[in-house]
Image (cartoon, rainbow, N blue to C red):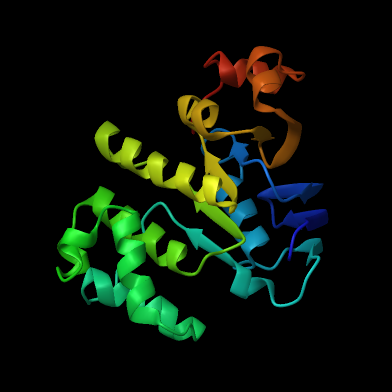
Length: 228
């Protein structure tokens, strides 16, 4: 068990103002805010891809990188088949029985029928599901999702959200960044709201959307804040 994840007065250049928070196991956490609020940078700092300019990031257990995964808005596809993309992630992690696990992961996200097609010719939605299959195969304790459906059509978005719900139901902690209010309502149990690099509110989702406690969050929910 590597959770909780603790951030103590963490900042990053001019993008993130010092913030402190703790991410616990259990209900899904949505990081919500307008474009440019600092969501992606915060996700990368938590995942360990960026070192904070100030403050401290710590996990409760050893070797957190082997127990977490991250899926980006535009996933990187290797010049290999869909199956080989998943298999590569398992081989790097040193997972035994990788071929069976890779096949199961593709089936779990509904891509078994394209297992041997080149990953780079798949549609945007299929590529995102393939990225999720790579994560699923590793059985992460924590899954970070950075705007995973921002460039997808409604049908592909529904398919991705179904996979995210399956991760959640399996016990994986979901931490997802989005600026999509509808998606945050559908998938979030709690909301962390960022505004101009500051964490201005954290609340259960049902409370946040009905009775936000800050004027910044209230304005965002009403659509009164600029998106860029």
